[in-house]
Length: 409
Image (cartoon, rainbow, N blue to C red):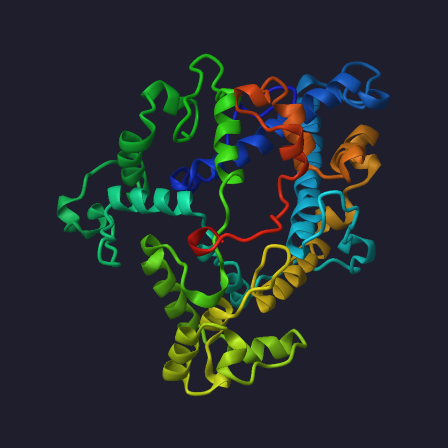
């Protein structure tokens, strides 16, 4: 909380705790990136912009702390935005690992910038439950089972606490149902001591150092590698959602109906795409074609939620259904162009010259951002101790050129 620094390995949204450990580990990477940036800014102290005292740019140590914090936060935000553009967008499209392709939506940012309003249709597009890999699917099933689910017959229940009569629920001041569920999660999966929990939110498979509050570097990399080494499952063709998330899918479908979203073909028209005329156009699987015919009668009546999930997948990039991938790219461009900070503030004047260069990524690695962050933030975790090899770092987000049948496709 001085020098612009965050407390070690912190993040805000406690709901991420029950996600697969790699999710929280990725947040820790950006938390550490903020602190790395703040220290580097003070070390370089470009034009003494972070000096304080008589005749200096800043009057007090408190002003220095605030200036370093805000500048580091802005640079960290730029790293995140360029990870989207340099790593994620390339992966969606399916470029090679050594590709220099760069879609820069900010080159033609709209003026004035009005911000971005995310529609319910785009909320639906990002429900990628079928993409969850085999290991993470098993993790979620176990977590939901411990917190109150029963998936042996494809059904699920609410957490037992939620089904208790109100008078019988645990009475804890200022404690939500999620807090109560989190305790059960910790007891089963994390086993963090009270001293650890006082230092910050937990990660399953890792334990904070009581003195520093940080997780061991190796534990964070291990959690990230668990995501790197498993294949995402197929999103399209509509038959791959983990059983543990059945109730979530049903809630999503009901929500879309209640809010009166457009149909699948109406959405394609909005994106200037041709409509699908037959059920065979949706999927190559006869069982899916027959189910659509029985449920909807005509392709024009297929709901948006259903159509997005059952449409056949592309053979390149993330292998998403085409409508979904087209909409995601459109949304990514609008999110960036509509963000005042990203569209107007990421300049050398605001970031410092070093900060501006840092957000651009490694010039020797096709300007990819996250690989450079992993190397700089975890320099002591070597391949021999479970770290990423140079080849793995180079291909962190590249889809393989082959397919696996079944749940690991």
